[in-house]
Length: 285
Image 1 (cartoon, rainbow, N blue to C red):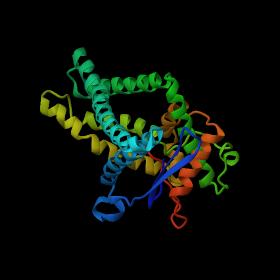
Image 2 (cartoon, rainbow, N blue to C red):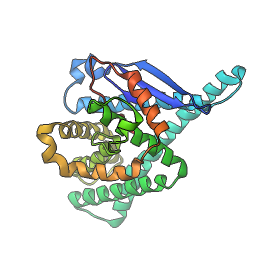
Image 3 (cartoon, one colour):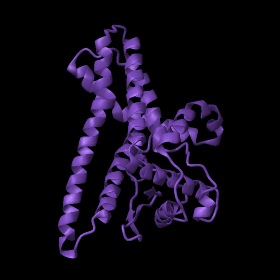
Image 4 (cartoon, helix red, strand yellow):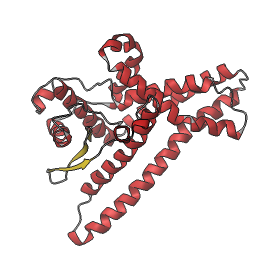
């Protein structure tokens, strides 16, 4: 899936070998409502929009994998959409459980009373759980193909940003690691959450715990601003140490793709491009 300021496009290679593309006009609320285009707030809005677009793209992708007779096609698509919606809700619930609630419980068991120490330990637990999760899913065979497509996205975008003709041969000359990747964003979120939670002190009540969950949009907004700042040449060299962990993690979340995977990435990119507005955004993957 690729996104430009005016469209997002999802390209899928069907079981029959064809590349099917869904191109959807999309103008961010940040561009339509000036009040939302302010630091931190725009990051929270962008996160919600990215989740929405991601679900739409997954629905389209899953529907293409359903190879049924014409009279069963509609039923199959409805079933696929419902199953996917359920999976998204379940995934969000498990995400909160794994990356917020369990680390919190583990830290409480250790009995730290000092708020700063409590939140530092909680943050370390959260980071460790996240890394274990990423490593665990990387061992799943099917995820390797997902990570290869992830790498194909990055290589294709590098070729585009360098002014190269979009082709598998040109894209393969570039790295699968990209500083504006969703993986880098997630690592920044983990680090920023530690800093934000330190100011909240040790959670004592249910209200304190709910407040931590309510801080997620703020954390996402701050992380978004950091990623934007790190992309600027004037700040990039100073922020390289902070960007490094995300690039290092991409050794797991991206893999060298095959030529046919790069072809799919190119198809999505070419579909969503507006040649008058060439800045491209990498979705959170």
